[in-house]
Length: 118
Image (cartoon, rainbow, N blue to C red; front, side):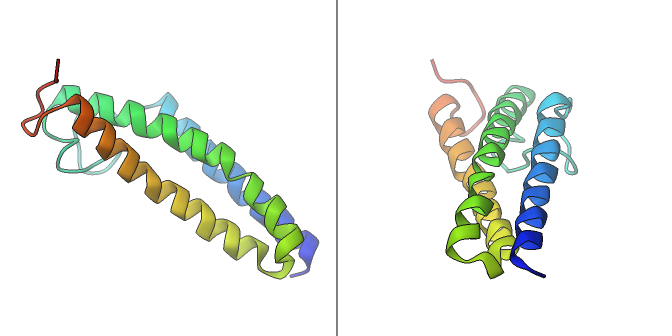
């Protein structure tokens, strides 16, 4: 795959991930489940925590997916032959950060039992 193809595939991947992020944001899970949404032990304590964690994490996902559009452009000039792979890795790392930021958010707003802090 040449450098231009790498760039287009990387940008296409970013578009795909952004569409997924908007879908999760637009259609959040209504009830606690083990299939769809932000699923951790803390986020599944009760419905209030579930709703807050999914709203927060989906907002972060959209924002991080928008940030990820810079990755293919940067890698195109630094390592063009590795552009697609590095974009996927970079985007994956940004998505992993959602876990840490959302758990921090939940820790600041809810106690261990899922009761909202005042």
